[in-house]
Image (cartoon, rainbow, N blue to C red):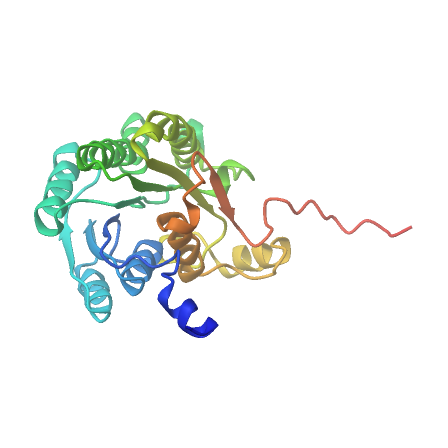
Length: 272
C-alpha cells in the first residue's frame, strides 16, 4: 500500500506546466521577463517578442532555458498585426501549438489629455491596446484550431480603478483591455479557452523608472496597504495561477494585484 507521501508525489500539481507551450509579449524586461521565467520554471516552453533591450531578452532566454525547456525571443512590434501573427506562427511551428498566451507588451505615457496630440494618442494605443487585440485574436484562433483549450491572460492595470491624472491614453487602453477580456471569455468558453486579466498596482519595474521619482515612491508606500511597491515576480506568480489548471474555473476575471492600494481610503480619521 502506498504511503500518503507516495500518493502526493504521484499526483501532478495543478501548477505544473510541463509540456505546455506559452507565448509572452514584452518579454525582455520587467513583468514580462518575470512571467517568462516563472512559466519556464513550471515546465512550459516559451516564445516571446520584445521591442527594446536585446540584452535583457538574451538574459531572459538564458534563465528560462536553465529549467530545461525551450525558449525563443524575437525582436518586433506588437502594434503591427503581421508581426504578432508571425510570432504565433513561430510558436506553433516550433512547439506544435499554443496553450498559454500572455499579452503584456506596453509602455507608459504621462501627459494631460488636452496636451496630447493625435499622433501620441494613436501611437500609445498601438502597443497598449491594438497589440492586445492582435494577440488575443492570434492566440484564440490557434487555440480553437488546436482543439485542446488554453489560457489567454491580458496584463491591464489597477490605474483604471484608482485613476491617476495625466494617464488618459494609458488608462483608456487598460480599461478597454479589461472589457475585451470579459467579452472574449464568453466567446471562447465553448472552446475551453479561459480569458482573464491581471491588474498590477505600483510595481517596481523599468517601465516606471522615470515616472517613479523618490517622492512618488514615498507617496505610494504611504498609500499602499502593505507599504511597499510590488515586484515583477509577485505579478508573475499570480499569472502562473491563471495560466495553470489551478484556475480552470476562472474566466472573464480581473485579478487586481496591488498590495491593497485601490481599496485604501484611509485618511487618518480621529478614532472614537
